[in-house]
Image (cartoon, rainbow, N blue to C red; front, side, top):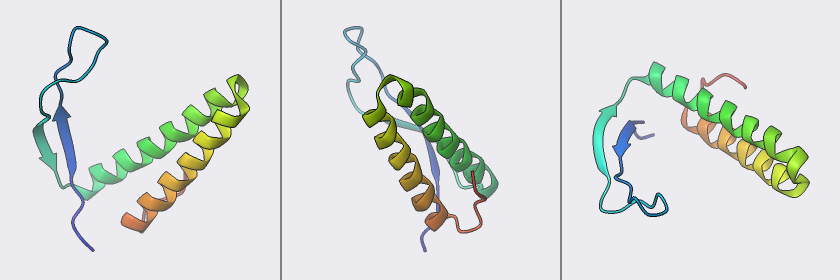
Length: 86
């Protein structure tokens, strides 16, 4: 298996419509597995939270977001086998 790295990326925004312009700039790279686990857990938690928020507004979108959260969890657990459940 390869190495996991978190990239902190800066993208400038256009004053019109908040669109990104130009190229992305990698401001930092982090290889700390404990920090990577924290970020993975937060990403999973946020994905489930987004699904919860969407569900009462639009059942279909909420279900899609829930499935996306499930997929994210499976992918991250494959990359980080000792990642704990939600």
